Image 1: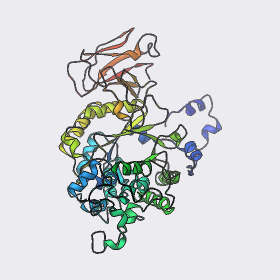
Image 2: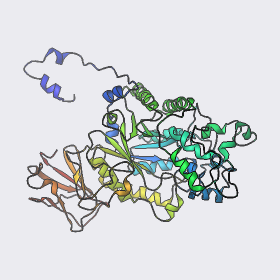
Image 3: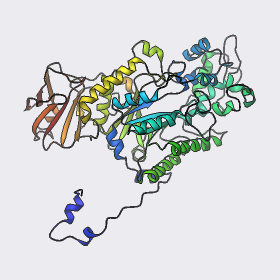
Image 4: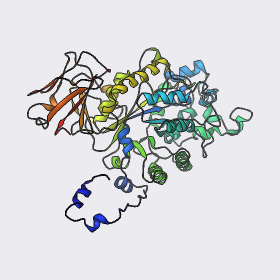
Length: 544
């Protein structure tokens, strides 16, 4: 029987009637699609607090050109690198559009069994599959959207395949939904060249209808359902005669990141919700990444969230679900899980949160691979330890080529992560934040999409986690001096009276020499370096 504060209070010379009464369990809460209901009743599940690291298969047809992010929108923007790439490799977008890229996506070298094991070995406790992107193709057996990967492209249930493999490995499964932005994101596909020999010729989305598919690979499908139809005020009007003016029009209208619903298409939000709920019921994920500022489609995301929480409660007897949103305020962060895209936190947050990033670009970018532009495993570990020390998780994307493979440099990064985890995993998984996240001089690039502002970590940057009475000090690099100084234990600090009994370096069997001085805790490190960054395990009294 677990000893709790209530047990201790009930014990004494005589047991109270209350102590002898049968245990009662509150009926699971019924979530309503309101901020009040969600914020008052949601609790972050323990599995997410323990998990710390997720790996994301951010993979879809936009990876086919191997040219990087947002290919679908930007291939329709004359003067843009993506437009030039598309014209050179596929043809003019009035004749060969993104629809045809989907037709070329075969995923013929996809081996998800191998990838799942690589991700697990690298430390992933949850694996997230992209269910759709702004390109509006559902990557699952979608009941409410015919443009899906079972019917076109690879003709495979991408999400369903991931789900079975991930759960078989004993990991938590997640999905990401980006499709709420498709309705404005796709409006460039209704435009035209403002200059050049095909000036004024509309792109494929503007002219294609269902009947044009007769006898083709997409026979029976309506391209307007993929491209979402013409949005009021966002389709470039006739008469734009310069690339600069066309760019300005697109940026001002469809380029705005909006969580509104399309004015002339009330069905869109209803269909989005039906697709999202169908996704939940078919694959029963534990985690949903919403690529939105707060919630999508003028609050429809609250309906999706409440539905998922209630379904999770039904499946598990308690709510095991996590739903992310970007740029949440304090109340919203109690209802959803705050996600900081490509950024960090400057402080230890009271609510559990997540940062997401990628070792490269979100969609596979061959040029980045060729110039060795990926984050190293060491950089990934630094981001992870920083997030974990501040009550956060890291969701890491490993870009996948259009054919389903990852390259040898990505495999090496995952293997290097696995090597670090083999030594230091106890300082990450199942831990909790200490009363202070750490110390050190480095600016971390805090805030949404602010990763580029971060400075390189140093050996003076140390992060803390706790578990089972131990304190872990995770240095972000090895000090060249062979000495680690932890100033958090300096004279006149909160921790100055801590009684430290042992200090160990994970990966080394024998305890280390240490000394408490007015400057802090001085630890002599061995010459051997068992991992890319050092982790100390500190035990004693009044530490945690």
